[in-house]
Each structure stands twice: as C-alpha cells, then as structure tokens.
Length: 117
Image 1 (cartoon, one colour):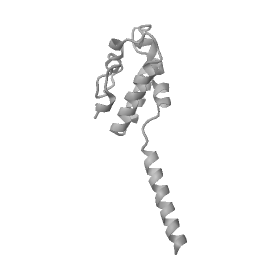
Image 2: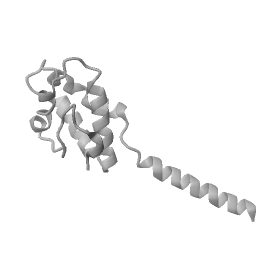
Image 3: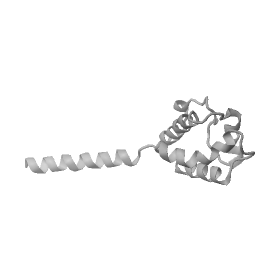
Image 4: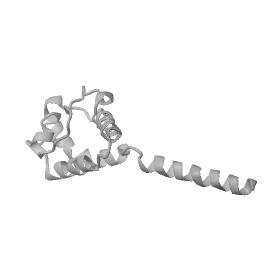
C-alpha cells in the first residue's frame, strides 16, 4: 500500500514538473540569436533592418504564448542591448514598424518589462 501511494506521489510530482517546465519562458539565448541581426540597424550602420532581423523578430513574436513570454523577451532584449555600444533608442523604436511586426508595447531601452500585459 505504501509503495502504491509513493508511486502515485512520484507520478503526480513528475507531471507537475513537466507541466511547469513546458510553460517556461523563452530563454535569452534564443532571443539573442533571433535578434542579433538587428544590431547593425540599431547602431545606425544599416539604413533599414535586414531581412534576417525582421525574420528573427517575427519568429520571436510568433513564439509568444503568454505575458510571461513577452516579459522574458523584453528583459532579454534589454539585457542584450547593453552588450553593444552605440545602440540608439530612436532606432530601436523604429524596428517593429519597419519589420511590420506588432509587439504590443513600446520598444525602448527604457521600457519597464514588468508592466507588460
């Protein structure tokens, strides 16, 4: 009887863990990889976002399944931008329109990711 109870608890615990981790937010490595091609535009080196930039950001936008995903992408982008000198906020804010992507929040180094909904 104890072994059946223990087995049930173990199975339920595993199911909970699987459900919890399958809903995990998008990792920064994925965000960085998808957004890397946008740096040339964001630093003013390119006159418009590249096809690779827009494609990567479109893939990110399509991967959003929850508010937590949106917040995670926002946090990753803000952290990633800090690694590159010369990124201009005014250029960052132009990327969604230039790529025809609706993100639902202002794209800026000053965006408070925690207030997104």
